[in-house]
Image (cartoon, rainbow, N blue to C red; front, side):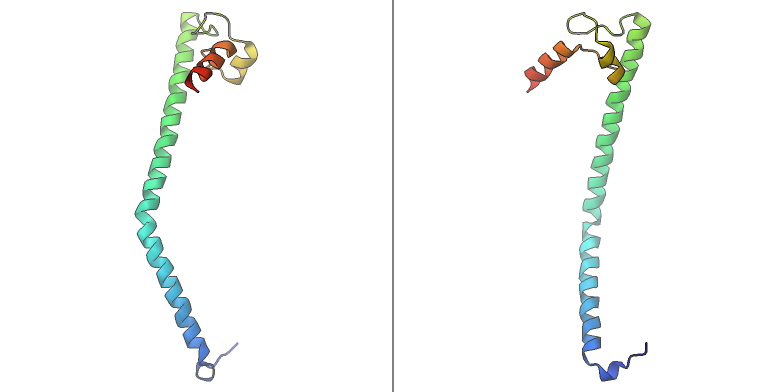
Length: 106
């Protein structure tokens, strides 16, 4: 589809306007780069911290298995229910103690 720009005086102006918009967006995106990088770094850091907490919980549970105290509530000394342990094998509190702890923190 050939187009003669000399016959359509609006075409170059439209292209220039589109170019101006794209250049403005490019400049905005370029300025946002460090902000986006920092947001991604913070998100990555939160993910690493969550993994570190989960790893510590699993290591603690393994230690409890070795000590013979796995499945015993750290709060009251009663057994943690099998369904609770199946749902989260690293649980250290029974449902009652976990409920009290969440109420205390809330």
